[in-house]
Length: 335
Image (cartoon, rainbow, N blue to C red; front, side, top):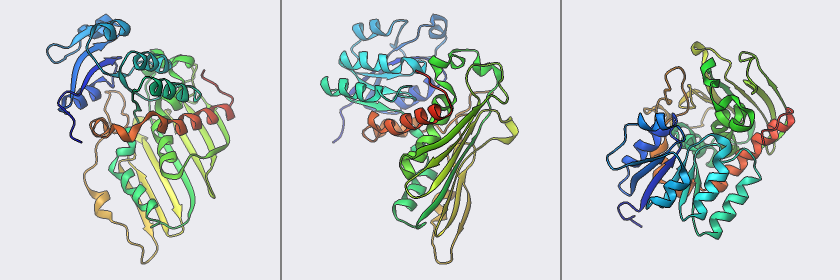
């Protein structure tokens, strides 16, 4: 069905670094119209470069009461997502929630229940699934090209400067720690490609950022259906040695998707007679988001806005639960 122009009249809550991705996504879609933005920081609001006729608020409830919006993007500090999503749903808006959808996996069913009760839709941002490399690997797995899986390893070696922790990200019960803030997209890819694993063991460290209350490194041993895996997530690397990769050992070969944000095929060693469409992997890939002093995930938000139906909030349940299990195994809890 072709959507009518401006079917979605949008308000955005939270005007941090990720705002630009939502602005460009909305601007690129004929059926979305940005009407208002909200942030508790008036100085930040005043400094925004916005399209004409976009109103600015410091109170999201006032924005929803006064503006004719029917779609809200929640992009605030992590601990606020559940409360704000529920309020927006109860007041007539569909909602897109930035990652993480919640710090507590028990909140996801509550939000879904509110959405159903109010006949509204709620979506979660898991845009790394839309990396071309990930879609290509997903097809290989779905088509059984690699045969029986024998092992998986996630390595996320990012860096964050000390200034990264000069805001709410340093507050454990607000930011939710390393995995909610940085590891979530790549742990989600494990769930997306292989199904949610159980957690055998996990351990956290502060190896570089020793003066903050949240961990900068965490290792875990995972148990998938019939094979094992590991996950290393750290922001203690240096700018010269960034890596984000998933290695897959299988009956018919070994492949490694890497780059800085799972955006390149780095290794493809397969048995004789096994055909891999390498031309699909060799096509141009998006570069990661650049935040000045550090980089993040690939900016697939425009594609996500084009297929919201594939990102219903319930799809975030597996990764939020996995993060919770890793934290509990390592002696941490952020709610």
